[in-house]
Length: 539
Image 1 (cartoon, rainbow, N blue to C red):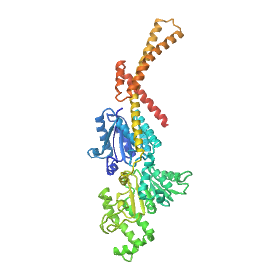
Image 2: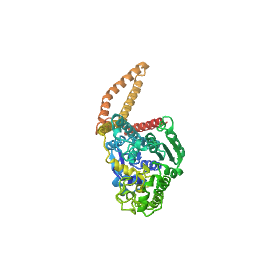
Image 3: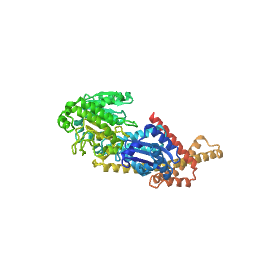
Image 4: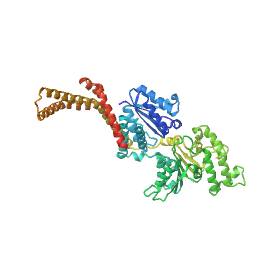
């Protein structure tokens, strides 16, 4: 086994780099084909999620493999190799197995213990099988990783510590309040209809939102998701949820009515710009002028706008803030967020502070959010400048990474680590034992050919033997050969399963003068059989 993984994740790279490195579905397929076209790689699989991109390969040369896989990742992500290299990590052989098993158990997730990664690993394997880039090693590896992940979740309490990214994100949006109490009765908008968006919609439905709209570029998929939420037994059926599907063109109108928005699409550009957020707030504030009437006298006098209503003040301020917020966004995502924590305390520099386009006074707290945005996409769907808009609370991948850094670890995490260590050892032993199997098969085939040859010679020397006598002699010779080979072949498999046991296959070939091509032929036959079995399973 020469398993190699080269990748980057939220643990090795900032979100800004992960965002640029995100791979769409077509890019993943092209990356796999290009990996197999290189000399060092015989198999390939890519695991791409919102917070990791990892390329797995079976290689015959370590250093050449690392160089080639790193170059391929740089080429397909569009990031220069020199810029990307400091963020890459490399794992080889047993360390690579340990890494994937840890990922499958949620130990390497942004939210420790989350189970959604299992579906993403399954998707990575399915793509490798579909494109025929995953052979025996990667099929065995990824299938075992799925089993290890399921074992960790069933045998330990890792689920108590772990949550899905959706649940964790909603908890951050609720800002300390119980999600079910916070979400109850609200109107939600989910943008996208993929696995993450579907999970978000189901979670919101179970949390008690009163209305939920699903927007997607393919309206049919949005309609299926909306129907699944309210059908008998669906997550929103018991609570009487109203779920509708809307085209993407209706997102601006839905945004003006929504209390909670979750976005997770595969778009390469922004889905919600800061202008669209400001426009929705303008409409929202104008429609709910009575809710902000309490600010009218003091705010109007402070801003020298006597005679205008609170709604006028807020509406104009929201529109005027677009330019300053956009300026902050253009300066970069981190600059747009500097000094504001998505709805927390803010130390402004006065009414004209460019970081606070809505005129917060020095030391004042931001107003209670009217619009809660959860951006789970990579690259981001929501303009980072929305962090700076009053009445908006935005939680995105970057803020989730910061919040999860201090999240408590479950006591069962140690138990999961033990499971991973045991499973890595067992997987390595199985792979080493499998490595010698073609040699053992070739040895037994050679022995069977020798028996057949000698029986044929016996027929020439003793032509008067009847069929019963010939069968008895043949069976006796075969039994002798089988008994002679049984102990050494069983023992060599046991030895091959131990660390450093790969050399026993070579020793066996030398001792019995086995034809290397015969061994290779057995390996090719096994590979073809594996592919046929995979095809039957998928059918």
